[in-house]
Image (cartoon, rainbow, N blue to C red):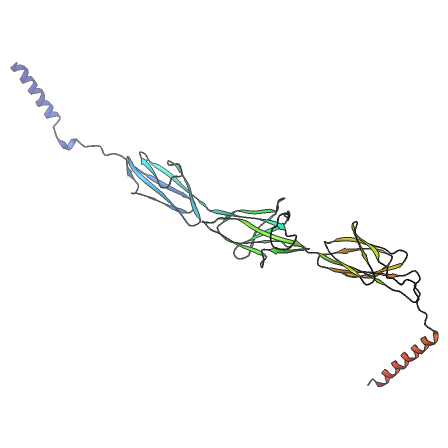
Length: 336
């Protein structure tokens, strides 16, 4: 028994000599540190609690703050989703990308035919397709253009926030009625109101004015005591009646129109004036081409079948010529 105890003590002594019990040789291993890199796409900033590197297991809160006119749209990389703020656990080196997207807006509207010119889009008034619209920036510089579709609609999309002017391209023969008092709309797109959908433009077609009148030259000793009333036709469908000294006024679209008179054996000539016309033709039918805003007067001049030009005696003619000659000579003498 004593020999066994001595043997055990001897072995322990040798162990102590070979492996001294010193705390200087026993060191605890520290946990690793991990780095966090943050990348930004667009305009904005990201804040985190603490600073890289982080000890293992640390929970890092990440918050995205977009710049004015931009919005946060999501995280990618080692953190995904659209929660803001969001958290990531540092159990390894991490890389996170934050994406900001510029806020854009749109401007939309319609163009209609304001048939009655009352600046109201009334039921039954049609839209106007194929009409060009111009978008200008805050300094009135043109930056985009588009055309109304089959429903009279137009739109400008993906616009940065800011101030814009919207105007139509004028067309011959049309007059803008709306917006009232201005030929364009001013639109400001903001973060709170990035879309404007209700712009309206009204136009009315400018008419041409056609005046049709009738006159009678009676001559002398005519047997036609009563003033005749003749039938007139404008185009293929409009029929009306005029007597001596009467007229009709028509507001018409730009087009070529035929005009006829049933003169019943009376001779007829037609005088046309206005809108580039100044002519006289024989016959009871004519055509006139009207342009927007013009006024054209067509006068039908009738003579009865027994029209006689009064005869002037030769002596009267000679006397008139003598008087005219004497008057001319007198003026010449008194001129300085």
